[in-house]
Length: 185
Image (cartoon, rainbow, N blue to C red):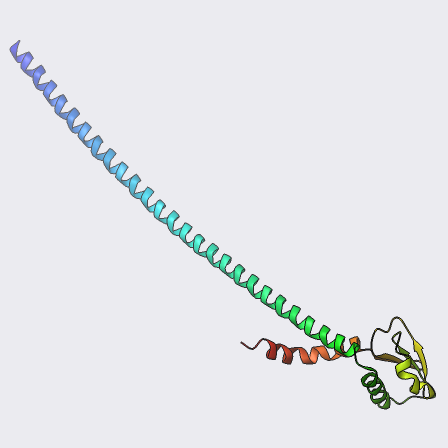
């Protein structure tokens, strides 16, 4: 029986060695598999971090660009507001011409217009006394819709010489030049 015990012992030892080798091989495969998965996870992590960094940079650029546009728009709005005030000041100054300046303006601008017969001059309320001497050449009518300057009607033709209309007409031509002088940078 001792042979049988030796043989059994040998089989058991071989089985233990084989089992040990199998466990060792499984552990190697497991480690290799885990290492491979960790490597894949790290690669994914790097890609995610790179993508997040690129998205963050793009978002940062958008925020900066948006802020720059907002600042530019606010500057333009402020400049436009200043321009509006400048032209309104010009209108106000023209509206407040003294009696002689207003009369000279009406006379000089009227001389440039060729009329048939006796035209009608629509003037702001309260300006009749300043323009009495022109009543021989034209009919004077105070009109509440005329705030400054005058409107001349000659038959079917209407000449708008109100200060608002004149300033608005030349505004487009002068705006660039005035802006350049006001906002020299």
